[in-house]
Image (cartoon, rainbow, N blue to C red):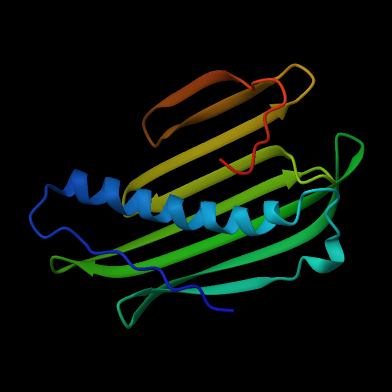
Length: 168
């Protein structure tokens, strides 16, 4: 299976706008990957059916990167869980400048496919963004730690009762 990503780059925007659109594009790709996992998470995930996957990323006919997904069985807080490791790499030229972005993500899910913990790092040139999120379905909250190279933030989010979280 091959995933083709299409995105038209802006030609006359400030660098900060281009980076924002670039990061949005990447996050959209990552959400696509989670939809593959959660679509099969309706009752109980079977690790045997979750094979490693590789997807090429294309801009028109030019390959600009790839994404790999690897699933494995782990123990999380004393209970069986499934860990998804994702690695996405893109390299392209934007207005004569080569831009490379590396995104790594580790998601731990219970046997029903509910996200228990997520850690994400995105590096592009000198920029860095990170996110750590711990999901507590008993207390209906998510503890998030996130930021950039220069700033650190913490926020607690409420999970609405009976909400189904497919990916973040």
